[in-house]
Length: 147
Ligand code: AMP
Image 1 (cartoon, helix red, strand yellow):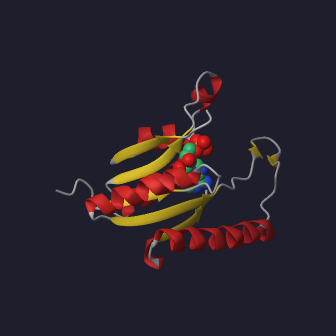
Image 2 (spheres, helix red, strand yellow; image 1 turned 90 degrees about the horizontal axis):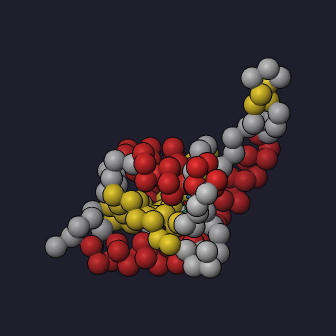
Image 3 (tube, helix red, strand yellow; image 1 turned 135 degrees about the vertical axis):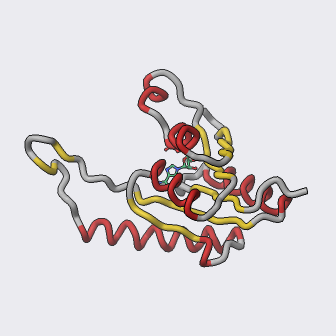
């Protein structure tokens, strides 16, 4: 029996993301589910209410980030056997974009890595935390090693 039909693997391209990728792939195989992969280029200009943008919008920089992210995403997708139509690359806040993409594509499981943060870092909120609190579907937080 399949528990999930569409699994979304969120990658930040860190060295740990391979562990998360392996689990997402295995879950997709076991459930005979569609596997999608997503990366969010985390670029949010920092703006001060009184003085305007502190780090101004830089179109060239974003283009460079997007182009390098696109290559990395395509390579990872190729390694995992993920089709082009299941590869997502967006800019913005990772947690908000991940939740939006999941909702718009009828994803029923989001797979993220978790650093098991505590104290102030937990108060500030990690991506895994944000997704867990805002997603309408199941979320698997894969505990990353060396934490
Ligand atoms: P963090 O809370 O930033 O340490 O990230 C925890 C997990 O959230 C990562 O292991 C990824 O699964 C996911 N994640 C973080 N940043 C991004 C990003 N920019 N794009 C896609 N997924 C991300």
